Length: 413
Image (cartoon, rainbow, N blue to C red):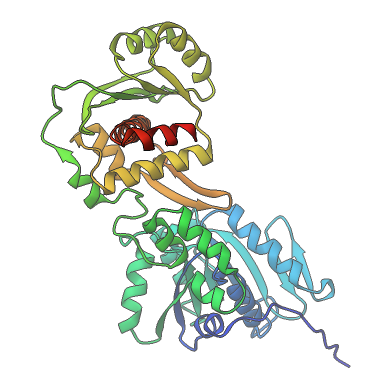
């Protein structure tokens, strides 16, 4: 007598189910964060494996890196009754009793994905998976004619996932869907207040990409390539700075100093690779002739303290994930409003490749692996100091222009 086992899985909301369980062989699903794409696809791959054509038939879940595939592996194990499967922690696989075997793999090495016959597959976070890995996964489905779900957050318009999602609309046996945080709110699986908070605290283009699945034009660049171009000036003016930003070298990085004049233009630019700290401090003291924000993170803390003893202009700034996010979002506002301008060259080159990545504890801003963001950090520090001085000056001028009676009242507050 066969045993009947009940599996209690979270219920999918209608749009979530319709997009993931679509009848088409290929379903391209552009989804925002918190829209339920991972949960829905775990239910889908399980349903497929439970109907395997023979014992041990292969089903794949492929994520950009091993850590992400491990998260999905652990999550599915937590849903299943222990008596219906065997888990192999080393190879990260779940073998369902008498039916299919679900593997959780990393896409970081495409060559390791060739060879096996696979009966169904999920590519998770597809916008971060290399196209060569997609080709490898697709080849494993050839003999079986197996279905595939290609899911992920949108991240610009130049990657294969974005382009494939667009072409899916006109290809037979392909479907394209979009799941957003708004859909999740309407389905009652995501709180409206959390969506409202994200809308208020994130830059508009970041919010739209992460929560509304609306791709930016430039691959996750928080400033926007067109906005960067609009801020270019033909040459550096021969004016005096009113604010400086200094990013100090760490290991193989560069020390960069940027001065901004009263019009918001970069009028000073110094950049050199690591030299002995005494020489670096002497150079900074020699050229800094206006209030300056200096990176005082880690090794920069004692350097900044020494600079403060030698100069009245120096103020420290400690980089943390939160403070860097706020700093870069402030610079993004300045660039989009053309409140800060700069000449072509190293500054523009670093701004062009700078990117953001959504993480659980916020948005991570940095240069791509192997590249530098010293110019971006120095510019952001200089602009922050410039913007604060500009606001202070504007407020002082405004208060000074009030009638004496009102001015006296405002001072008594």
